[in-house]
Image 1 (cartoon, helix red, strand yellow):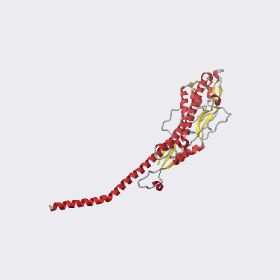
Image 2: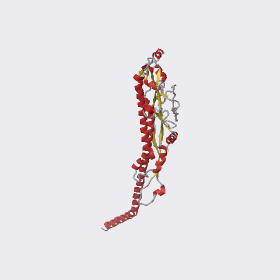
Image 3: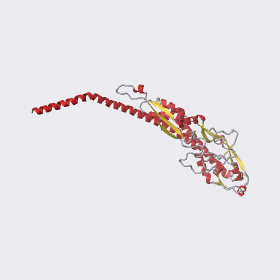
Image 4: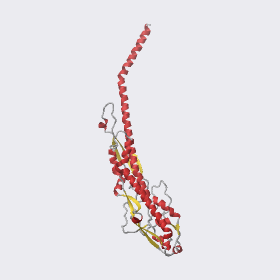
Amino acid sequence: MHFIRHAVWKLQDRKAQILLPSVLLAPIFILVIYLLFETAKVSMTKVRQQFALDNAAYSQVSSASTYLNAVAMVNGPLPYRVMLYYKDQKLNPKETAAQAGKQPISIFELFYHGGGVPTIAPNYDTGINNPPPAEKDDWGVRYDPAIQDFPRTDWEREDPREPDSNTWVPVVSRSLVNDYYFPALRYATVVIQNYLETYVQVGSIYESQSYVYKEVSKNAVMFREAYYLNTNDCKKSDCARQSASQLRRYITLSTKPFELDKVRFYASDSGLSGEHGGAINLDLPMSEIIKTKLFQFAYLDSSSRSKLRTLGRGVVLKQPFKLPRNHFNINLEQKYKPYVRNTVVLSCPRNSNNCVWPDPLPKYTVTLDP
């Protein structure tokens, strides 16, 4: 009996020994739990802010990428594909030209060799080519290098030289019209109307894209809106002010339309006065016919080209953020000055990062780096 009581007493003594350290360690355990909780709050805030910055930067710069690719498309590939409709519509050579061995040509060639429409590589003889492979990084968009009446070499540069205001610019090959039947009354007027409608529509697309881009890039509005929607700790008017100001300097890209007022077409005189007539001028003042100049392409101004070179190397964005209050009443912002950052890159497969004009290539892409 005495042995049993002694054993019970010993067991109770050991419980007391375990209870005392447990009571002493309890505050430490509670402190660790609070530390884990506060650390999780800081980590969640950091992740949320980083996601907001990445999403805002990608959204804003993607609008620039979309705009530049759209301009590159209207600068050649789009009107080329539309005018390629005429590649199967042939013009027969006149009697003298036929005797000299000339073969029928397409209406597309009539405009291509006259500088009315560019083509893509590799065939610059006829200008008729298949669409380039999607993975190709150079489409070789250019005007006929062999144009004689009005060479386009002054156009195919980063700062194209506009023709004199008194100069009539031909868009149809005079030499080909001299050799081939292109009667004005029966055929040429319909083709010319379609050509004008094509470039009027292309110009309208360019103007619409420019208007939209100007609106979404003004004051980096898309950037700040996206940042605000992904966070809950800032006022809409103050959200991402610092990083927005950093990005705004580079996304205000500007393009200038290259337009013609005095456009000259040629047609065969055969439909008017005789079978063997030569080419006659059809001079059309655009400001009177379509009430505006005729769009041909658009190009970047020097300031925008400089901004694109910087965007090609990457623009670093840095945005401070507020940390939530903690149970220890420690001002972490004052001590650590927390911020998130990334590097946004807008680039195309050119060293100059200019794929708008000349040789347009709609392959601008956006990447984000840490």
